[in-house]
Image 1 (tube, rainbow, N blue to C red):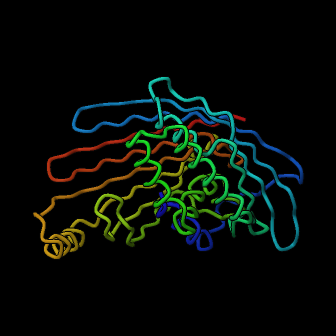
Image 2 (image 1 turned 60 degrees about the vertical axis):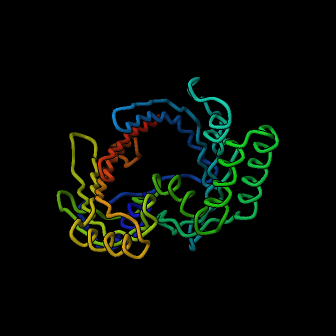
Image 3 (image 1 turned 60 degrees about the horizontal axis):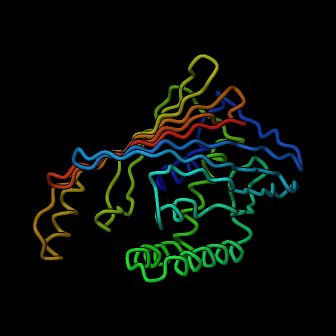
Amino acid sequence: MKILFILLITCLSIYSQEVSIDLNIKIGQSNNYNILVKNVQDINGNQTSNNTIYNVSHKLVESSTDGLYFSWRINNYEISKDIKGVSRELEKLNEGLEIKYYTTPNGIYKSIDNWDEILNFYQKKLEKIEADFWGDEDAKSFVQSIKKNLLTPEKLSEYLLTELMLFHNFYGARLELNNEEVNTLKIQDEYLSIEIPIINRALIKKDKSNYVLEINESIDQMRANQIINDFTKKENIEKISYSNLQNFLYSYNSRFEIVDIQYSKNVIINNQKMSKFVQISLSN
């Protein structure tokens, strides 16, 4: 997801004036979104699925010539009964979290304001989970992994922006309809822990009264193969066959409020196939 948000933020200024989107939010106005996440995962034919429902309260706190100041609260998680134990607690890790952040006057993200509060929130949450599942080595391992991979400024920033940028990457933007943007860049791959070259294609279209943004990310396979071969030689491991394809589909209403997000991912490592589909539905 990280590459999606970087792409959208950096490309907004070069779009044409075909479509203009305004940020019409009043100071003190709070918008509440009910979010339904449908998650389906398939690993070599073994399929699992679950639904998560939660509520987001989004409020404009201040407005000035320098920009806007927002509050973003996450509450009321409803987790699938199939998710139990420590996995259930980690699934609702964000419950009760408030993110305070600044944007430009047009609503493009600038910075998070309450880093200390957020860090303290996660530290306390994870400490409580550790205490509640004391003696469970698997639970301890899960929590330690999250602490290592989340509680740093870089990782935490990326994690929180995944939430925030879904709702802010188009405010004030000028977009060109039916004009595909193609970018090539590298991202840190979560499976191999090396940088992989990615071809990113983004296209926004009009569908009746709605707008649809489709983003496809695929590996630049020839360049990636050379990088992976060099990696396996350096690490003295067997040669790896690897592909990774991600697709994002965003639907917006005529006011450019997001109403639906679909995300799919297909990964093949040697002969192991993994696929994931997530649908997020929003309602005020």
